[in-house]
Structure formats: C-alpha cells, structure tokens
Length: 329
Image 1 (cartoon, rainbow, N blue to C red):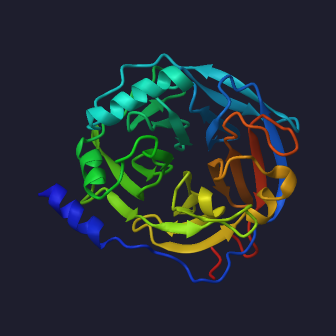
Image 2 (cartoon, rainbow, N blue to C red):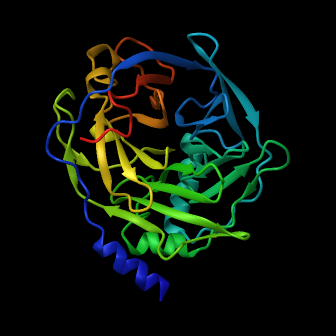
Image 3 (cartoon, rainbow, N blue to C red):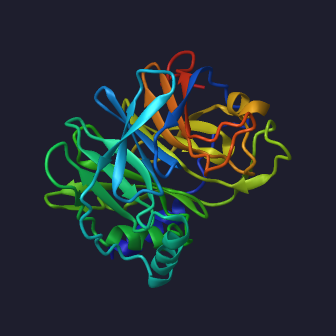
C-alpha cells in the first residue's frame, strides 16, 4: 500500500523549473587546492562546527578533516573501523557491478557525500550500497538502520536504476532526525527519510522529486550540448535545501519538504574560464556547503589535470548573492 502510494506520488512529481531568464552569476572569492587525499577524487563537503570535512569515493576506510589555515589546504585522514555493510535492497546486478568496479578503481563503498548534525556526528552516504554511515565524535561508526522501503520506493519512481548513478549527496538537519538524499541522474531525485526510534523510514512517501530529461550545458562550455539533468550534492541552510546541479553549473534553492525549486544561481562564468577547465565533457563539482556569507564548492577532478596543469582537487569559495540566499527572483 505504501509503495503504491509512493509510486502514485512519484508519477505526479514533474519538473519544477524556474523562469527561462538566465540565473545570476555568483562572485568568486578564492580557490584552494587540497593536498594529501590518498585517493584524490574529493566527493563531498561538510562543515562540523569550525571544521570542514570531505570524503573520497576511492577510500573506504577513512574520511578527511581539512586544515584550512594556509592557501593550500591539507587533508588530514581520520581512519574508520568499518562495520559490515547492511543489505539495502539494491538488485544483485547493480551490486555485482559495484563489486567489479572496485577492483579497477578502488572504493567498493563509493563515498559520495558527507554531512553533520549539530552535535558533530558525521554522516557519509555510500553510493555503491545505497547506505548511510554514522561516524560519532566518540565511539564506533555504525550504519543507519534504514527501512528497505526507501530503496523500493525510489526504484518504483525511476530512481536508483543505473550503475554509478545512485546516491550522490546527503544533508541532515541540525537535530539529526531528518535526512535528505540526492539521486544523481537518469532519473535524478530527492528523498527525505526521518528517524523513528531506531529505524529511519519514510513519512508518507520518501520521494520528494523524480525528474528525467536533459538540459543544455552553459554557453561557456566548449561545444555545449544537451546532457542529463543531475544532482551532485545537497546542503541544508536556513530551512532550505540547496542542490548542486553539476551539469548546469548552478546552485538551486528548493523547498525542503516538497523539493520545489525557488531560485538558482550560476557559477559557470568563473569555473569555465579557459585556465580552469578540465578535459572531461561534463561538470566535475561534487561538494557543496551553503552558509550565510557564501558557498563552498568542491571539485572532483577524477585524477585529471586542469588546463593550467593543476592535478589536485580544488575547493572554491563564492560570495553569497546580493540580497542573500533568501532573495526572491
């Protein structure tokens, strides 16, 4: 019954887009290369109090604290004693492809996002297993007990169907009892689960948004073409959900309970300058933190060199838009 309800809701979820007017451009303040990530491939960003944290989708046994005191940031590894991964309900075919890919590229868990609650618990999403790991300040890491209905409802709505296109972003509220997950592409989507005693479950339906289709890359992109709509990360700020929409080179503010898009801002003008481009034919931004005075955007360069020769991950700092993140169009 619940699955049928979720499917019906998903079929009603249509593309919520803003007007056709170009999104205003964000102003770049600084950029910081990140040294010391064993596997490279910076794949998420989070702020825990005064500290910034990140993950690599090539490292299964550690996360990273970022030392930001110098212009070049240092990634300090924090080891994890990894518990056994729980069964999520993904089909055998997807899981076997993840297992096979791990021997080639590393990273069976494929960490793709990190977030923190108000007491400093860190939560990391595994794309490879559609699971969420909680890492407390003190004590062992544990996998959240998530109802298998989440994956079932997501797949019934067209999400989590394709290899390497599963969960790509995660955000939690300060109280630590509501969790948002971003499904990457083909179709992309946003899900919300809530803590109910010891199990995280859907409140009605899990799926807030399921959206397919393509959109044009920014005009600054060489040989711009239509590409799949995607989400690369999510950040919760001031009660709103902000999505990093990598292929469109933009950040969008959305209603946290409905996922309806309210306004978007572009970062294409700055990150698509000739000297900052990468040879890949798609966006590479995978980490997002939205704060009152600006936003951090992290780049997963996939071990490729930027046009100016830089081969390490980079985190960019943008100023908040005029009028702040709550400004109306």
